[in-house]
Amino acid sequence: MIENGTDLYAVIETMAPECNIIFSEKRRLQHELNWNYNIADVTINIANNEGFGLATAESVMAGTPIIVNVTGGLQDQCGFEVDDKLLTHEDYIKIGSLHEWRKWEGKAKPGPWVTPVWSRALALAGSVPTPYIWDDRVDIEDVAEAIEKMYNTPKEVRKYVYGIHTTRGIENGSENYPVRSIQDHDYKLIWNMNYTAPFYCSGSKIGAKLYEGWLVKVKDDPKQLEHAKLYRNRPEFELYNLKKDRYELKNLVDEKSLQKTKEVLLGELKTWMNEQGDKGIQSEWDALKRLKGDTTKWRSAKD
Image 1 (spheres, rainbow, N blue to C red):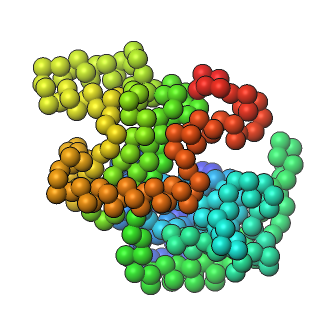
Image 2 (image 1 turned 120 degrees about the vertical axis):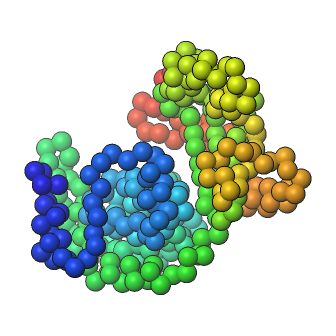
């Protein structure tokens, strides 16, 4: 932050010395990132030419709302609807982008998890390898209004948080192991849709030293061995009490007293999947066909 780019410490000292602003300079583990997202009221990314925006995507998956500039890949995280129709990748191919505020602000309706901010100044930037890219700059007054709106929004605005995981096309991943999940404030339901197959990734593939070593280390402890095996061979459904079991170690899916909870969560998950056009296993098989270039010829993860 000091040797390259803007000296953020100097900016804060000059413009907002009375504010308690903290920078993270260390690489964070996944569970630490999850903590950060969950202690925050909102995650903000108003970069003027963001290609994707991983932090806000992770924030939404952690259940924390976002404020983003309607530019680049950030707009894909907004769940925009136009004329009561959810925009899909096919719609974006035709539209191109929603960053022109005169045309789309007020017409494109965002999902409840996001407060979008449209840029007021559009310019072109580029280089030799990248001929041009839109440079969309937001107005600080619009951002301030978005922050105020989110600050005044009740915390119970999000009833459910949904999750998607795939191994399709992932190096060392299972050929097709789709996982979908849903959680409310108390319970998380995980649906391992192709549960009869083993779950493979770089860490659990056949011959992976880390995973195989784990199995050897706990071979004399039946409880730990059973837990270790679950990483590769998972049940169809997993249900966890998020308040009492923060690390999600005790699967309660067979508890009779929680069958209604499971039914409600599964019903909501299926409804959401239907709204997204998610057909589960079939969508996973078709995923590679939707990619551009030579990837349209892929038939398996090995390709």
